[in-house]
Length: 122
Length: 417
Image 1: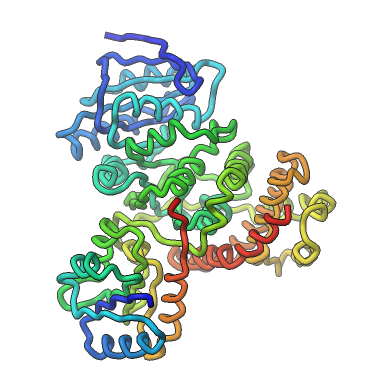
Image 2 (image 1 turned 60 degrees about the horizontal axis):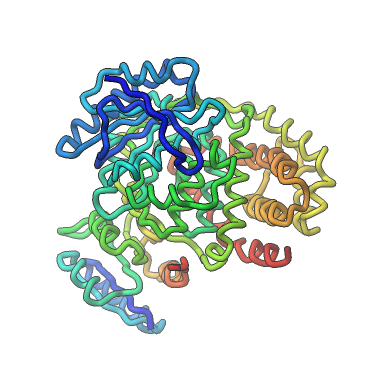
């Protein structure tokens, strides 16, 4: 069972995503901010990270830069209510960029693709 | 003091070296490959020196001009350019030319100097700044082994990268490096050793195939890659996509196909693609790159006349469905012309398979790809004409996705050969 880590400061989003993704068979961990993100990633070893961009105290784009230094190969999906952050170069370091919607079809598709991605290690 | 010495047989290549400060160790190396760049080389040398002094002042640094024994006095201009960091001049023997051969000398020298980071900038760069040296070098002192550049480029510049090198390397090796043949790079000491010892060197790699070779070897070596935003647009002599391709096209494409043969066990196991890390942010302050004029009629003529003379070649190795679709596209009127990215992906994959099988002499195959490249470029130019940079980048990403989705076609065709 793939483990998905969601970071979003909106409780409603965390609940919706947790419910829908658990129904799809994923194990879900949800964080309300990025304070301990690196430690949680280290400890939980998620298979994919779904990261909000505009949070009250943290920028998902800055968190992504930190993640890429330590966890180069962790799949990350940026998830934002705004499409405007797509033009920020920092977003290039994400596997996918999905604009938030109550319909999670695109998020689920990208999640599936991110988890299917394969690059031989040897 | 000027000393000239003839070094030993590094990778089978003798080189001339001028090392007046007798430098035997350096943490940071800036390499400037050149051939007949006497008019231009002083500027990147000065910028490299400023960058090293400003951002790496606590470390031992050296600037190396790796040259092809230029008859225009490049060596003298380089060595006489005032710098606070020491300089070394290296040259291939008089009968050996090519950017790749210059860099081959640089790899060996970087290993000899026990360098931690090597930054390469082109000698004819009018836009290089000290910050480029920092952006290409700094990540190598942290977690990364290979740094590729991210520039703001005009949408019609770099169409070999946009329509061939980027989508192919991404679909094959699974890493999204937007400028795999950008020309300016950074690599770690570890990567220098890998390059220095790599066995798959070819004549094309010794020329302009070197950039795609380095990027591909880095991907194949699982090197942590970062793309670094250079801040300023790359300014060289702009060439429109209808201009004469010279030998560059054959050297780049030939290297891609050679590496496909060498690394097939690796790329067959790759599915979809992953990003790299990125250094840089925003696009709000970007400078507008110089405009590139496109000769649309020239592209059309090169496409239509080129394919007309080569239908027998294409028919000899393409499956009927792809060949028929290509004929359909060639029959479209100029004003409604469109070369769909899915067809382009299949065409490139078919050429790669034919290259592997030697379905025709390899040089004829690559020559036969040129008109189709002009056709795809024409279609790209027409489609992106009303688009801004961001919209064009999204279209390029969509094209890459088509290459990834078509990969089963490549796997099937490759196995059949």
